[in-house]
View 1 (cartoon, rainbow, N blue to C red):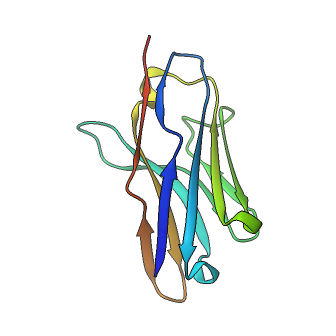
View 2 (cartoon, rainbow, N blue to C red):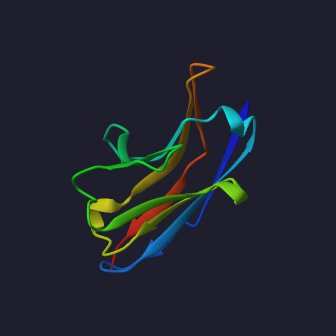
Length: 117
C-alpha cells in the first residue's frame, strides 16, 4: 500500500506561482512513476506532468514551459512548481503513483488550485 498526501494549493492571481507537494509513505519502493493530474468542474481528469524513477519527465502541452515536476527521493516527496498561472489552470490537482509490480494506481485526496483576480 502507498499513501499520498498533497499540500500547497490555494488562491493565486493570474501570472502568479504556486508550489504543490506530494508526500508518499508506505510501500514507496514499489513506485515506478509519479505524476500530477487535474480535474476542472465539468471536465475529465487530465495528466499535467509525470516523472519516472530515473527522472524522465513528461508534460501536458498546456503547461510546458510553465510547470516543473521533480522528486526528492530522500524525502519521499514530489513537487510541482507552477509559474505563470492562468485561470484555465483552476482545478483540483491530484497526486498519482503507479506501481508496476503491483499493477496498481494510487491517488491522493486532491488539493484545490484557483487562479483568479
